[in-house]
Image (cartoon, rainbow, N blue to C red; front, top):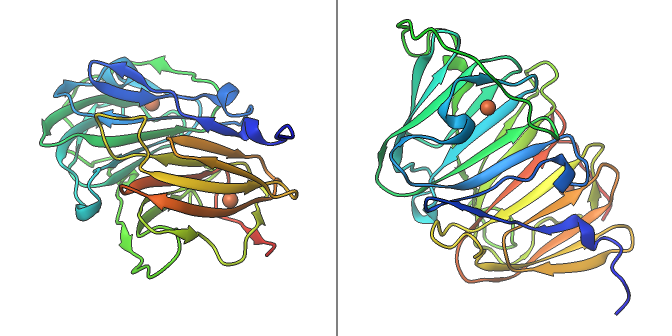
Length: 286
Ligand SMILES: [Fe+2]
Ligand SMILES: [Fe+2]
């Protein structure tokens, strides 16, 4: 078989086990040098989160935190209650539904504390930097009513039922974009899928920005399991790649990609398109 030209852009996710919680944390160097890092994983433990999630900190770049349930049949549910401290005063915000937290550069955030966990849930952090730059700061701990200053940055994520009758695109999807935020060059989707077939009608397509396509499974005990077999065409050559494990596909700006075709589905799975632009900008070529 001829050497694949775009095989390096199809990256199997590598998970780490931290006390029964599986996380994958690629940085820019793992993503073809893109100006983005992300962390995706499954949380289940009660109490204070470890790592940077355990201490108040700031970044010189924007970051978003997404909290989602893992239950396709209850797609807008969230089976836990998480407390997030934000701001210099350490004001506390409660997360008990699917949520996106938007953190502009310099906004102090964390610790995160899981107060109640009925079932494991999913967590996706996206940072607008290829390298982690984190400075720990001390919150004063002075009482501050929840939502006083930073409540607008905690946004309920409403997944919508697409009422899909055919094709492999999302059944339930929510999204966030930085279009109203100065220089927050990020928009992303979060979705649950079960459909078979082509995702879009007019592929291939191209964007003026870099994009990561994240395919993950919904079994918190089995992070290597996707539950589907996916085919994607890459480049003007339409080189076909197929995968059936959790994967991130890197589509650098200007690179033609798709069609995306779901060949087989054994279990519902999740997908996020992480686009490094304030708004979604797609040119369909099909
Ligand atoms: Fe952070
Ligand atoms: Fe795309």
